[in-house]
Length: 384
Ligand code: ADP
Ligand code: MG
Image (cartoon, rainbow, N blue to C red; front, side, top):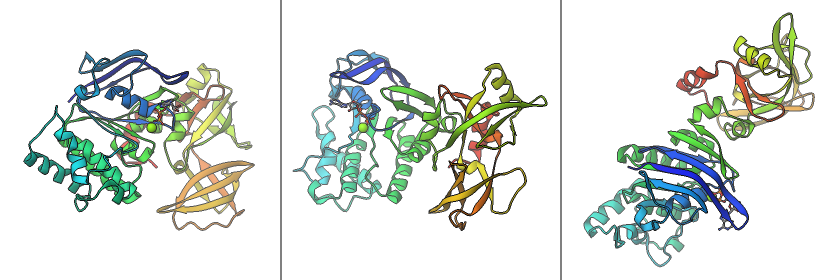
């Protein structure tokens, strides 16, 4: 319903720069996710679009029109805040109805009732319509706040961690509902989360925010498979990606990498070799995800020997931490894996799956077949 454009936005709170010359273009009908650590500027960015905070520099546009001086009410955005901010003296029904009773967006009571019932049913709070906020759990209050955001059909929905206080099962269910609603309504949505699974499952595109600037902008698969730097790589995936140093070596004309105190050179593919040669890289950081590492308790020739450091079941899989000469390597094992601490274990990793970063700058250098990998792997959902 609207395109949102930010042009060179700088927002300071006294001498703290919350948004640092940030530009962003969110397309009409897009489900756009802002993802990043606490303090990155996510809430400030939403408030700047809503008109609750005013940037010192830059332009905010909605459908091309500059709205810097337009009051929040006239921007026709619907925002759900991180800290809910419900009316304490109103019950659930009236809280959710309130945006439809405002002077500017007034609707008749029959329509209001229909909408309140629609969203409360969807959020499974339709039994709570008479309760006051003080009689609700945090998760219920959060759903009321979300309901109040969703009853309207604004130009844009701004949602600040709207599911953060729900338990895992409900969060999963609500994600599905939001996604479905978004496609049915053709609304533009900007959604803040610090949960990477949520970001990946909801987003058309994601912007990674860090210290007031955008680290990377793209699809979730692009960020997972070809992160622009180590910071982005670490944000996606459970367990966190393994990143350790390696030396680029050449043996009989074949380029490869040694790492983890091993003598064996792990060969790299020709596309990777060409980039390492042309950039004259000697030392690199190797990023490799736990799901891409194979292990065996039986000795295997050419595999890396380590010992079990910890072995932690997390639902449908086991995270095994293997100590290799002091470096801890996280890998994903089947959930029936039993391993005593200190037991010898052999691991194998294929440089075809590795993401190489500069040892100096932590910036992305290359991964094998980078252009196709997210498309090919994304198709069979090999993310985790
Ligand atoms: P996020 O939502 O990503 O956690 P915020 O946008 O809330 O980040 O904050 C970005 C930075 O701006 C933080 O360093 C925060 O402390 C600071 N900040 C946010 N709001 C205010 C405020 N009202 N006054 C002073 N500093 C603020
Ligand atoms: Mg915030």
